Length: 140
Image (cartoon, rainbow, N blue to C red; front, side):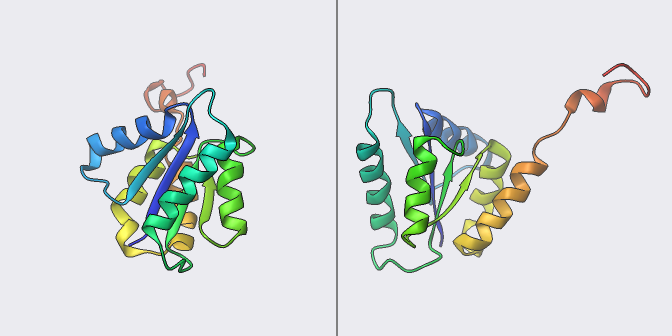
């Protein structure tokens, strides 16, 4: 089973995982790693590495996917460092539709497969919901 690590600024990761649990139930293979204000990047790096080591002690490729909040931020840079070292795959821009989809399918796919699925699910979850309820030809 692929392990999913969710990381982001503040308590974003924990909140996102808890919200996904409200919808899909157990997310035992999904692990949040928060980056609280005042925490150093070294601490975040160590905590992400610890989750990866616990989930995949043999270091087998394709077993860990890291979902980070925003490209360029510290959590994403940590994720990219793990990807560059071959310890994980990484996707940025994590959102709830993406996490729900992956939580339901993590047992059936490798990390690279889930990474591709994450991008599609994340994009598919973004909608102009107002357009669904506006009368045809209405002002947007």
